[in-house]
Amino acid sequence: MRNHILVLTLFAVQLTTNCQLSIGAEGDVIHIGSRRELMVDYHLIDKLDNVRLVLNRPRDEGITLNFDKPWEGLFCGYCTVIKDGDLYRLYYRGRPEEGADGDPIEVYCYAESNDGIVWTKPELDLFNVRGHSKNNIVLADAAPVTHNFCPMLDTRPGVPADQRFKAIGGTMTSGLIAMVSADGIRWKKLREEAVIKTKEVPYKYMFDSQNLAFWSAEENKYVCYFRVFEGGIRRICRSTSDDFINWSQPILMEYRHHGGEAPIEHLYTNQTHPYFRAPHLYVSIAARFMPGRQVLTDEQAKAIDVSPKYFKDTSDAVLMTSRGGGFYDRTFLGGFVRPGIGARNWVSRTNYPALNVVQTSPTEMSVYLNQDYAQPTSHLRRYSMRLDGFASAKALYAGGELVTKPLTFKGQELTINFGTSAAGSVRVEIQDVSGNPMPGFSLNEANEQIGNEIERVVTWKQGSDLSSLSGKPVRLRFVIKDADLYAFKFNE
Image (cartoon, rainbow, N blue to C red; front, side, top):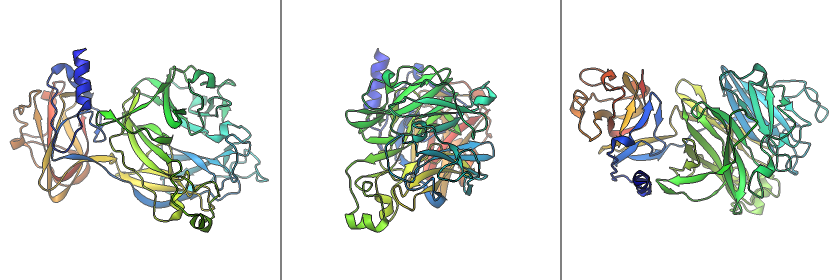
């Protein structure tokens, strides 16, 4: 009980630029092994001195795919991007006209890319829709699954070949229905009955959004995040399963901000997924919906030809993270991707992120946003970031330091993802649990790390070998000047 009180007390302290926290007890050592750790939360941070965690907003790379086919149109949405080896797969709802959720007119479309940048729409000849038999539709005549069909690449060891791809979809009337595919193109139901039934969810309204699932290697389970309403606000529930058929009683996700509670906001989609370079960390680039927050005048809305019901609200994308369990860290409350310049970006249900961040170059990853919703210019837009670069620990020219909580690692060397100015640097001291420098790894013996690299091996005067410290409780002290630290990792 005393340990629980201590943890809660620490969580209640807001970490600011010059705060200092101390855990001290060896029983509170965090075991990170050889996992990559990103600067997106305070999970490993004990002390910040003139260093702060900052959100790094993605760069707009322009339109990557127009929703311009007769079966696509103004109301395309609920996109999913999957990197399958060297092939990028994109799934999105096609819907030219307004209507009720789960209408039979809804279809699911498919595009492919070799680089995640240039996309093509294959002619699949699977369904005849609106008089077109040659189209890029992978699912039709499957309402209400086609309202929010959300595929995943199943990475569970030993998964049957004909279930290599799985998906869920459905509305409150149907529950969440599971589908499977061998090739990601041709789909069939895993079973007729819904795998998560409406009557099993203790809320009055649910599922009217993009609900998702994935295999978690960290938890050794399937994990599902889905929409509910709680107190009239769009919220997120989580459930787990060993077999994708039988799911646990759902729990309502909470939000934490620097140890306290974060504001409860409408999150229309959650887009939670394991980060591909650190799968123990779940990244959520969620659509934050601001109902009734009207930006455009009637005249502005008419000028962009937006559907009349779809300019009374606005939305953007926010970043959350989770390490499993019943809460998200909302370390950064501000917008991650802000609406762009111009009226088209300030309508209802635009700026909704696609599910999954994917790597698109040796140093870059991309997130995609559904934009110009309910407009003739509806499209998918790409935004780029450096690898691991959601956020960083930043110090200005005067310099500062970050000290971790006690941790153990497994490996022989430490690597960092960082960037400095010409005058800046990062140095690393390794300490014992009490904060005393370890012989050979003091700050005076640390070599300055100067440059801008995704993976730089940290060195001291005697070299980089840390094998003598592997498995022992230590602290890391990062001394940072005019630089950003994005992530660190111990390599075996």
